[in-house]
Every structure is written in C-alpha cells, then in structure tokens.
Length: 445
Image (cartoon, helix red, strand yellow):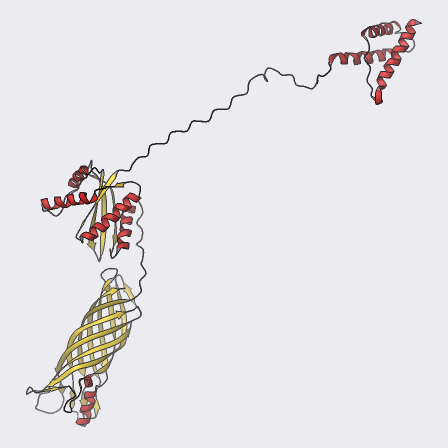
C-alpha cells in the first residue's frame, strides 16, 4: 500500500510539472532520493497494470532531470568554446614607412653667351641677352654674373690675334678662367634679305659641341630678337622648328625713286598737211604712298626736246625746255605672286603742273613762258595724262622691297598748243603720248 501511494504521488507531481505555470510544460526538479525510489518502484511494478505508462513517464522524467544536470544555470549551450586556432594572436599592422630624405637641390651649371657676326655691337648685345635668358629659362643653366667681363676678354683676344676670330678651344680656355662649365657661341649671318642665327653649346672641359640649334629672322625689332633667341634654344634641345609668327601689316607702304619720261606727238596740224609736234625727254624723282589696291604719286621732272615740223620750211624747229611737278593716283589689282616677287597691273592718271618753260630758237633767242608781253604762262604747258601699265615688287626683306613700273599714256592738248592753233589758224591740236619708267625702293608700314 505504501508503495502504491508513493507511485501515485510521483505520477501527480510529474503531471503537475508537465503543465507548469502559465501553460509551460517543464518538469519540476525532483530530489535525488525520490528519483531513485521512483526508479526502484517503477522497476518493481514493471508488469503491473499501467506499467507501460509508468515506464514512459519514468523515462521522460529521467531525460528531463538529466538535461537539467547537464546545463548549469547561466551557461549558454550555443556559445562557441575557444579552440586552439582562436588563441593564435592576430598579426600586428606594419608600421608606416619612414619618409625618404629629400634629395639635395642641384644648382644648374653656369653658362656664358658670346655672339659673333657682321652686325652692330648693340644688336650683338641684344641677341646675347635674349639667348642667355632663353637658356636660363630652360632650367638647364644659370647665367654668369660677370658676362660683360667675359665678353670684354674675348674681344681683347680678338685684338691680340688680329685674325678677326678665335676658335672654340680658346673660348673654352677663357670660360675656365671665369668659372663656367659651358659657353654658347651664336653667329649672325645675313642671307637672302634676312639673318640666319645659329648657336652651339661647348663644354669648356672637352671643347666639344654638345648642343646646336639655328633659325632665321629679319631682326627688324626686339620682337624678332626675342623670337629667334627662343627658337634657337628650342631647336637646340630637340624641339621641332616652329613657323615664325606673322605680324599683321597695315597693307600700306611708302617709297621713293627715280623716273624717266618721254613724250611724243602733240602740237598742231593744218589742212595742207603741215604739222608741228612737241616731243621731249626728261627725268626726275618721285614719291609714292601705297595701299594694297592703289597708290598715290608725287613727282618732279625736267627735260626738253626739239620740236618737229612737217611744214616745208628751211628754218629749223626750236628746242623747248620745261620743268613740271606731277600728282596722280593709280589702281593696282589683281596681284600675281611668284616667290618673293609680285606683279600687278596699273591704271590711273597724272596731272603735270608746269612750273617753268622756254623755247630756244635756232639763232639763240629764248622765249620764256612767264606770261609777260603777251607770252604764255608756264602753266600753259600743263596737261592731264591717262596712263596704264604694269608694276612689280621684289622683296629684299620682310619690309623692304624694290619696285619697277613701265607705263604708257596719252595726254590732252595744253593751253600753249591751243594758242598756236588760234594764232596760226591751225585745224586741230594733236594728242600727245609717251612712255614712263619708274624705279623705287619701298618700305612696308
């Protein structure tokens, strides 16, 4: 009976623990003595009624108790236990590298510049200064502080030798005296209306040329000196030659030159076939002011010639002398370019203003055109010419050029010819005609 009571108590406790508070199915802890007794009793009534359920309950209880014993309070069963690999220390981060010491700044070697050539001394100095500046700006060299003394010493050697030049070896020796490692020798040579500028850098220790460069320029102004100096140094260090910058011009020019004139025809004709013509030849000078499409001229000429007569007369025609000033304008277009030469047509007018004149007869008598005693004024020989022809310019340099012109023209009758017609009852006056040749030098603005 006692055993049965103990068994029922165990079953009731087990059921109550399975329900648990708030519906949780957990078995309460069972004392070890009771647990042992329970197992003992369960084994004893293994074949009694309800033995299967009791055995099942016992197994459940045993499993519950065993689990409780294997999981102590406060321990997380899912926690990862440290193993041997975890105990290996993580590698330490490498220390940052120490900064490398900055390399010592090297001072570029010193260089001096010497310019030779048949040009003015101030032009040599200008080119020397510009080339030295270009070399220093390249970052390869520093300039010599006593450049004037160095150049003076070279000039002194020129005087001593009386040869007009000293060689590279002698210049190298002078460079050593002044503490330079390199000398740049530049030469200016006139060529085809411009200047070729060549330069070479010499190592004073070996007297060998280590760099060389050249270019050309008209050297008309400081812009030209600056550009050619920079270009020579640019080519010297392996740069490709660059085109010279084109300066914009105004398209205008001025010039002066000489003129040769000749006149034929003119005069008066009569119905019977008689005629008097007034040919003359002369020369003088002229100025021109030129634009691209046209030009203006101002000239002065003097000359004369023997009149020609077709009348049956035994007397010789007189000679005439006269001086005149001319002013005119011409159009010149289109232009044909052939290398440094350009050609262009010309068409325009000139008005000859006579300032003096006289007729010298066979017996030596002179009739002066002064307007006195019924004589014709000198202005009575003035006339208008219409001329056309060709002109050509040949460039000497970028600004200087030579000009040549060949013109043919016809002129109107002058007042003196009209007076002769009235005085001697002539029938008509004749148009004069003639040639003109001009040669001049011009300067482009």
